[in-house]
Image 1 (tube, rainbow, N blue to C red):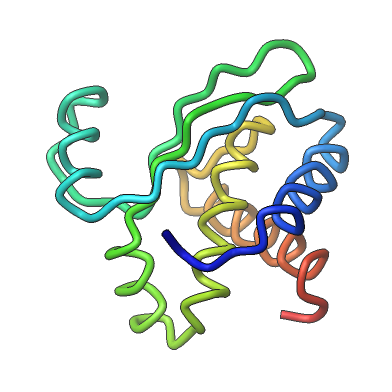
Image 2 (image 1 turned 90 degrees about the horizontal axis):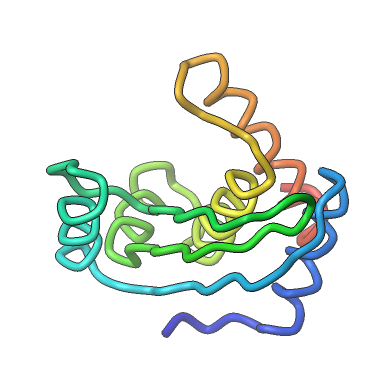
Length: 130
């Protein structure tokens, strides 16, 4: 289990949701390794590859809810690849899932760039200038 301040992260998630005219409902984070996320990817999404995050969206109306699987192995690899602190990368992935629950998409290059900007904006809300 990563060292995170649950109260701080919870308040941050609520603030980000409000920014997208949503409210936070039941959101479960499952921190796992690469093998588990590959298993989830294969079983539920019919994808045969590793990823840093899988978000299952159970949102209704303005209330965001879901299960968010995060591979801590891939978060670590990404932090090394992008020369970013592990804690920052973990928070980026956490809020990435919340942005998906808020209706944000990243299926194209343009949308991925917009998602990264939204992640940076959300990180700034938590950490100041990122």
